[in-house]
Every structure is written in structure tokens, then in C-alpha cells.
Image 1 (tube, rainbow, N blue to C red):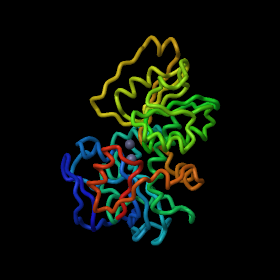
Image 2: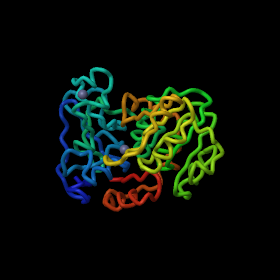
Image 3: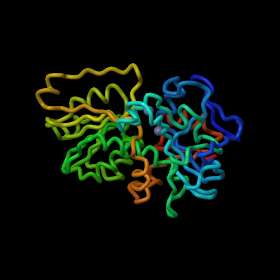
Image 4: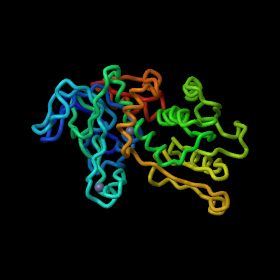
Amino acid sequence: MKAAVIESVGKAVVAEVPDPTPGPRDVVVEVAACGLCGTDLHILQGEFAPKLPIVPGHEFAGEVVGVGSQVTEVSVGDRVAVDPSLYCHECRYCRTGHNNLCERWAAIGVTTAGGAAQYAVAPVANCVKLPEHVRTQDAALIEPLSCAVRGYDVLQSRLGAHVLIYGSGTMGLMMLELAKRTGAASVDMVDVNPTRLETARQLGVSASAATPDELDRPQGWDLVIDATGNAAAIQDGLDRVSKAGTFLQFGVADYATRVHIDPYRIYNQEITITGSMAVLHSYERAAELFAGGVLNPDVFISDRLPLDQYPQALDQFAAGVGRKIVVVP
Ligand SMILES: [Zn+2]
Ligand SMILES: [Zn+2]
């Protein structure tokens, strides 16, 4: 089959690789679409993936074309979206409900072959059947949405919060759509690239600007979400949290990124700084929210490129052009 392969640091190609074979509790999915995200860039840069080469792609959906000998829950012809998480279920973190922090953390498309290919293998336990009205290609959005749902799981969100989101890429926009549903009083968004804020305005953001200085909230925001991973944005965001407010580190920073915190203010103003990592018991709910129309796939997916153009798709994503880019095998 044809697959994208990250061969070595900085080198992505499209190549012919062996077809995947399912274990007894696995299914083979003919991929309809696979999304690209920051994690794929981190893998390209030599982070996250323990070993290269790897077939990337952890955001995908498709049609079941083969099932292992002990699979009865899905059949050939079913359309599924795939939760990429592979937990050990044995370590202390798994046994205390923190599976996403598993000591043997693994994921399809990060530690095992992923969905940027014609076919991918996944445990049947990771597959969620798609309802009739959901287009298979669009369901590649469920995985990033499940990360956004996990982000809200770590927050003690209250009705009437004022929310500020840094970064109007796909993840920032998903946080915006969810914030609207959590009963936020206002959701503001900042992005250093003003053309990207056009979509946020289209989706009904309360206010948007290049910097929070242009937004009239000197008292700060109850909830500040970083969806950039960028040091300058994170540093700025930490200072914008209101008294008793919360900062959520949602964007993925480089390993070497450092910012300053103000311990006196954290104490004196009861500031909470927290983070959320990937997916935890949130995939099923994301699939249900998605089926319920929480977001418009035609707004969120800006580019549908053929799999052959995977390296160019990565370049385009790295350049910050467009929103969610998916490759179509
Ligand atoms: Zn992702
Ligand atoms: Zn574990």
C-alpha cells in the first residue's frame, strides 16, 4: 500500500510499504481522510516518536475492510473513526484513571503505524462507528475535538466565565466552539496573524485582536487558554488571568520552552495553572458532539490534499497556512 513515512528527522516521503495485518482484536481501516497536526511536526523534528521511520497520522477515519478473528463488534463495510490512544491498562497511572499519562504511553501514528496511508490497523476497542449523516472524511476531526473536550475536562468551568484564547488555528477554534457551549459570558481570541482571526469572527467570537491590549478587559479573564505552544503567547497569557482565574496550557510547546511565573500572584490571587494532554475518555463524547453538529467541518477543514502530497501538506501546515489540512489516500 501507499503511505506517508517520516523516515528520519526532517525527512517525510510517500512510499510503498507492506499492507498492515490485523491481530485477533484489530480491524483494518481503509482510510478516508487523515488530519495533520502539530504532533506530526514534532515527530518530523525528532520529538515524541520513540523511533523512526514511522507512518504518521493519528487523526483518521475510514471504512472497515478487514477484521481480526475475535472481532464481532464491527463488520466489513462499517464506517469508523479511530481513537489513537494505546494505553497499557497496567501501570499506576492507568490504574488510577490517568491513562493518557500511561508510563508506556503509545498511540497509533506516533509509536505504531498511523493513518496517513491507504490502510491502517486499530484495536476494535478504539473504533467508534459513525452515524449515517456524518461523512467519513470529515470524521478525521473527531480526534482533535476529543483533545479539546479533554481540555475542558480538567477545568472547573462555571457559567458566565470570560474566556480568552491564544491562537486561532484549528485547536483554538475548537476551544472557541466548546467555550460557547459551556455557557461562557464572552469568548475573546487573539492571534498575531490577523488574517487567521477571520474564521474566529465567522464563528461568533466576542472580540478578536492581535494582542489582548486591544481588548478592553483590564481585570483579566477567568479562563485563559493557550492554543499556540508559543513562549511569548504563554508568557503574555499568564499575566492576563483574572483573580481566581485559570490558565490552561493546551498548546504543545517545544521541550526547551521556558516562561516565568509569579508565585506571589498565584498565591495572592488564587490563580490556577493547569494543562491537558491528548485524549482521556473523551473520544466517544467528541464523536457524539461531532455528530450533533458542534462544529462545521467545511469551516474547519481548509484543505483536502491527496496523500501523495503529504510532505507538501506538512510544509503548508508548518507555514501556518489554512486550518485543518487532511490528506486523502
Ligand atoms: Zn493531533
Ligand atoms: Zn499505563
